[in-house]
Length: 110
Picture 1 (cartoon, rainbow, N blue to C red):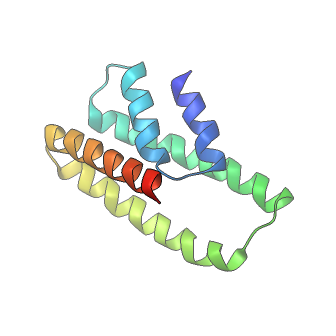
Picture 2: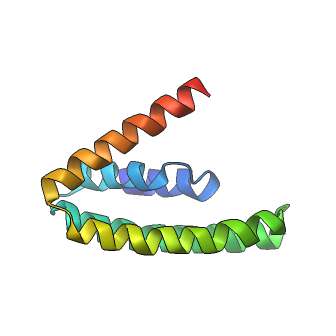
């Protein structure tokens, strides 16, 4: 149920969705962090694709923002996955926690 809830959240508002989904998957399964990160990436792709289709067909879209965000998101996702595969699992775990806390604080303050 937790990963499903994070997908609904991520489909509407993608901010920190990766961290939220990774935490939800970690709470729901016992797999290692690398496998969970790969599953999170696949689920995020499906979630984002479905959301994109719904918003493109029935929602107001700022296509200039899409033209900037789409390629930078793809590049960031590609290099982020490569970095995650190279990092020690314990370092990756603490990095996810640190980024999650930083995003939470930034969203709370801003």
